[in-house]
Image 1: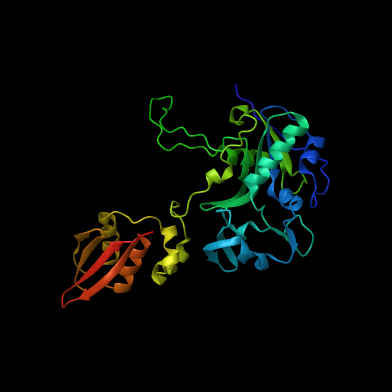
Image 2: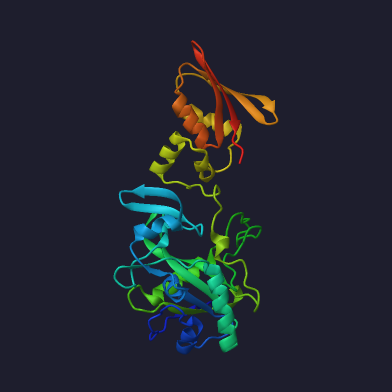
Length: 327
């Protein structure tokens, strides 16, 4: 039988800049080896001086790497930590009127420091997770995720193993740090003033003292590896605009046959053929029978990691020179 216990203590004082979080936590918990201490990013930000006067808009530019999607005043951005969040994770709740809280500068470093301090104060070897709230692209509502971690296996890799029926597991990678964050939030609650929780029952995920692990940054997909690097509307605009700096979120160049298949979806007036003409660097001639919309073909190429280097329109067809984009 498996058992998981989550405790979120009451009685924490208001956290302010330079509050010793480790001492505050030890005053309201009884930690044991193998526990996972879960702390909301809000109190970490308060202790680290990341609360400032102003509104979200004033801080948004410095926290944003690029816009992923927008609908009216709502901006979903990739922030400087690599996280995709509404308003870059800047929050105006649970802070004084006229103030906003920015995410910690380095949540993994914050988790490492807190873990070391807890070990020194209590002698208990624990894992630490720092959480924040995020939406999900295909589902209503929000859930807490791990944005910082120390001393914890943040993802269990089951690839290469078999399920009970003997089926091989290829890409099974439970994000256990996120699951711990979600479980902790159930006990903490959003309005109860309980920013700390202790999760007990997964000591197998806690690393040896001194081994802080990869951190939660392990869970952040690299630019270009995410199949949804832009929102639906934003992707159309970026592909049509074709600015080189917008190329990376679309991913690496696709194979030639995949490019042809994509172009055929917008070019329906005749045949489409692709033939190699150079090997180093690779270059191809793209034959388009009938009339062809250069803007549409160029945008499709851009979105698939290719460039249109030349365009020759004849009486009954078009020959374009195309090549995979270089990083």
